[in-house]
Image (tube, rainbow, N blue to C red; front, side, top):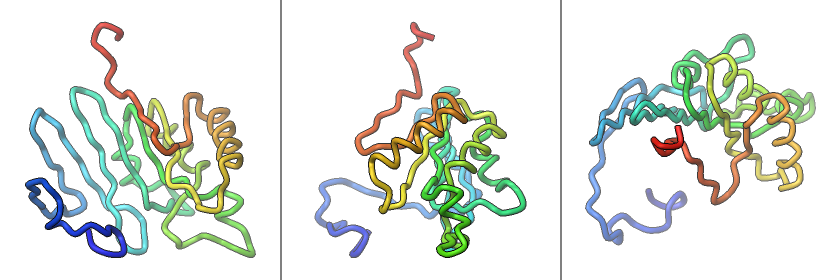
Length: 173
């Protein structure tokens, strides 16, 4: 958490913080029965995906990951299995990813189309497409969301300030 990623040095923060190393593949249990499973993701500079479970509700977070051309990533499928929500790296469209003149293969990011396929195969209830290419406009992302919802009803494109309700009131279930 130093420049260029974070401009505020840790010694200025007004909190007691403890850091623990996590090795991809570790499972960590926190207070109140919160369980976090981890797995390595397919990214050139190493990335970790997370599966957070609490009171029988699960959110899988797989950002900074690139799909494989010949198969689904078993680590992503394992993290996403039957999750309430999958937040998935959808930086590109398939057209952008495979473009002959500006291929994104090997950059460490995936497409919304593959995200939908993974969500379907893993039995995910809701998929959120996350980590958008900075060149994509709001209008372009609105079009992507329409396509996502046609392929996966209830699927969304992440927006700044978005809040998701994962755990409903016990009375409303």
